[in-house]
Structure formats: C-alpha cells, structure tokens
Length: 247
Image (cartoon, rainbow, N blue to C red):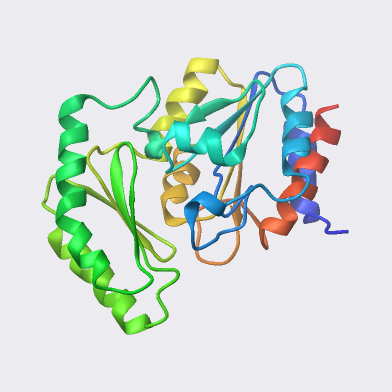
C-alpha cells in the first residue's frame, strides 16, 4: 500500500480541526491519470469513494478546479455529490462565457485547425474559454515541438497562453486557477485550504494560497507547492489519510 510522506500526514493532522475547510483538486493528472485522449481520462480506482468520504465530513467543501469546461468535467468524471466545480482555469465560476468571448474562441479554433490537422496524432480541443493543442500522441517529437511553437506564434497578444504537459492552451480570458481558488476560499470563509495539482497552471493556485495551507504537487518538476506526491497512484491514499484525519 502506498504511504504518503510523514511530513504531509502531519500537516493534514494539524489542519484537520480547522473549519470551514476547502479541499480542492485538479482532475487530469491528479484524480485521473493523464491520457492522450481527454475524453478517456477516467478516475483512478477508489478515487470517487475516497473523495466522497472527504466531502461527507462536517464543515468540508470539496471543489474540482480544472482547465476543462464544467460540463465536460462533470461528464468525464462521472462524479455526483455536493461538489463545487470551477472550470476553464477559473473562467467558468459563475456560469458560461458570453457570446462575444465564445465567438473569439471559435475564430481561434478555425485558425489553428489546419496547423493541427497537418501533424499526425495532434489533437485540437475546443473548450468553453479556450482552445488547446495536444501533442501527447504525436510520435514525431520534432513535429510536436514545432506545432506548439506555431500555435504560440499564431496567438495574438490578447490571448492568455497556458502551457502544460504536451499541450498549449490559448485562452480568451485572463482567468487563472489561483484567482479562482482565492475567490472560492473567500466566498466560503474557509479557515484553511488544501489544493492538489500536477501541471504548470496549478502553480498559480499553489502561489495564491497562504503558506500555512496545504499545497501538494503530484509528480515531478519544480513547484511552489509545500508538499509532493510521486504520482496519481498516491492520491487515493492521500485522500484516505485526509478522511481519517478529518474524522
């Protein structure tokens, strides 16, 4: 059985009595392993049950904070329960985007489509507030890097670029996970917060939270998070430990 680091377990014990408590997590690369096709990103075994146990504790609010649109996040996760959903890197907080922003997104997708179609294995994903160019399934790595560079050059200055693992997302708003997480924390009047993330866009969330909150980076790479879990396989044991501490 995977055990979480002792210092992280101690931090959870120290945080457990503080209420209200916000427990927030990215989806892809945290609750679900990363896959080439975004629609195939299913929850890790046991994740739904462990998350449900955390959400059932008194004074605890569980939120999913994702680059996915809220509707897509709800559909692909299959989660049901008292969860809060923040999508499109924070752009979908109080509802879908306006028609003008959606039109800009569609124009951007039309511009990028020929570039992506020219690289076998590349995928263009149109989200509520952005367009993402995925290259995880591109076998020609030089072509993958070249496509991301071309997509970067195709972006006008009004777009917000959100590079990630084998993906470049071009957003029509400047929302980020950090500002969204602060907003949610303030709205709940949370005494403390926990956030789990794995990608570059999660660094905004790690930096946005007070230092005595618990921030957890899943996987390798430099990070502003206080703690680290080695991979998605360690996330369910983390949630189990959290549920025990909260009890």
